[in-house]
Length: 257
Image 1 (cartoon, rainbow, N blue to C red):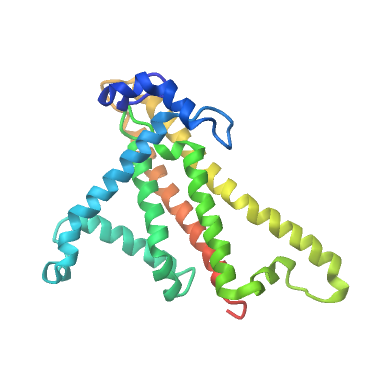
Image 2: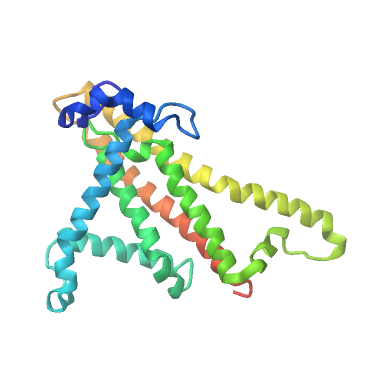
C-alpha cells in the first residue's frame, strides 16, 4: 500500500476524492510546514470514537454498585480499563501526592489510552498510527506543558518561578542566577519538542519496520518484528506518561518537600 494511504481509503472512498480539498482546508502544518496527512487525522478520529464506544460499553457495569464491586473473572474491556487506570495511578503515586495523583489522573490516563490504541493501530497492516505524526504527538505534549506551568503557578503562586534561578539566591550569585534562569527556560521550552519527537520518531520507525517486513513476507507476518513492535508500543506509552507525571509532579510539589 503506498505511503500515506490506509484501509480508510477503501472504507471511505470519498476521502480519496476529497483529499486535495481537505488538505487545502487544513492548510500546512505549523511545525513541519508541509500538508497535513488526512489519513492521520482520520485515524485519530477513529481512535477517539473507539475509546468512547469502549467506555460507554463498560459504563453500565460501573454505575451499578452490585456489579461494580465484584471484578470480572476474565480479561475483558472492563478489566482492561481497570488495569490500565490502576497502573497509571500507581505510577503517579510515586511522583506526586495522592491528592494530585487523583486530580491529574483523567489527563494522564486519557493520554495513556490515546497513545496505547494509536500505537497498536499501526501494528495492523494497512493502518497508520496517529502517533507516528509529529503534529499529533506535539499537540499532546503542548497540553502537558501548559498544564504543568498553569497548575505550578496555581499551586505555588509566583514562588513557582523561584526554582528557575537555581539553589543559590544571594546578591553575589546574581550572574549565576541569570545563567540558571536562561538554562531552565530553554529546558522547559524544549520539553514539548522532546516529548513529541521521541514518541513520533519511535512510532514512525516501528511502523516502518513492521510494514517493511510484512511486505517482504506478505503471507507470513514476521512474528519477532511484531513482538518487538508490541514492546515498543507499550514502552512509548510508559515513557510519555512517566515524563508527563514527573514534569507535573515537580511543578505542583512545594519546595519544602
